[in-house]
Length: 147
Image (cartoon, rainbow, N blue to C red; front, side, top):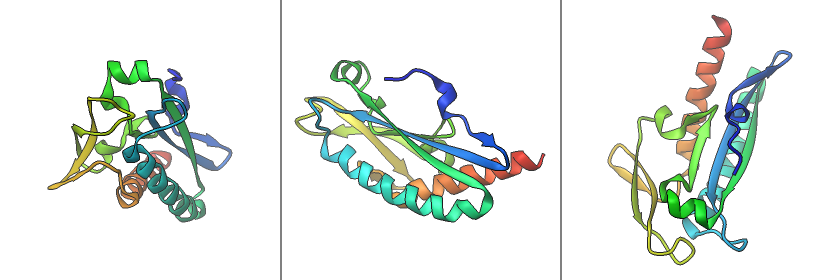
């Protein structure tokens, strides 16, 4: 897994700003769990919508995917299925909390990361939450560029 946090900071190229969305999950023998697989599909939808929505504002959205080895996962199961936007955890943008619940065979007998927003608990992170977090991040990028 890459440990270079510089990759996750927003940056600017000319007048275009870049929003980095980073997602990491367990990949073991080329497979991941249904929870991470579902999040990957939701993430693809969210990136497409965010890219289209933020392009007129001069913000390019870039998705980076990191894989955790089974050894890394066993040390910290809650590091799997985790999303950052501009080096800040997704849950910080949407006033969410993390939790854990049992997962499946790829993950073994450990509890994996969940996301709680208001009264809902999500094992798969839905695209609408990713989009909401991305829009908050974009507003912060625009505000900081104006100051």
